[in-house]
Length: 152
Image 1 (cartoon, rainbow, N blue to C red):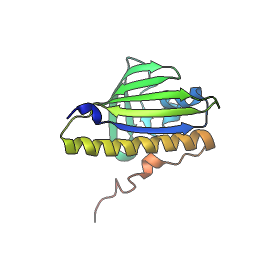
Image 2: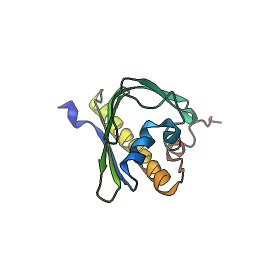
Image 3: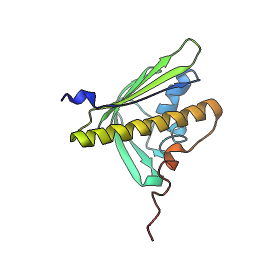
Image 4: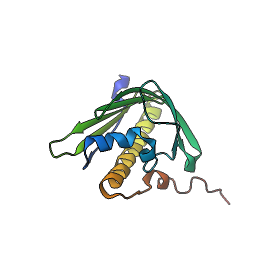
């Protein structure tokens, strides 16, 4: 079976100009309001960055492969994640996130696709609420509310 069929995809219309939406993903001062809690720096092609989700005691090292302003971002972490930003005539932005290059058994790939699709959908929904309504929904943090809870 061809491995390229295993990919996660999430898409969302954001009712803001492409420059605002793109900036939200490359500028950690904005991204930390809807996705991860800490970053070692902005996304710039050729850079290695660390993203932290402090509520989950988790960090990811990413390599920024491509940054095309207001059009596209590509990172590796260990899969390849691509954001495509499409400007629409009504000054809104359609964002498409594809996570590909998934390794493992068929069951592991399916589980990864399911989890990544859910995760990126939450990220896009949280971004939409932040940019359109200035509301920080905390969707990523609230996904696993009992993560740090110790059993009795």
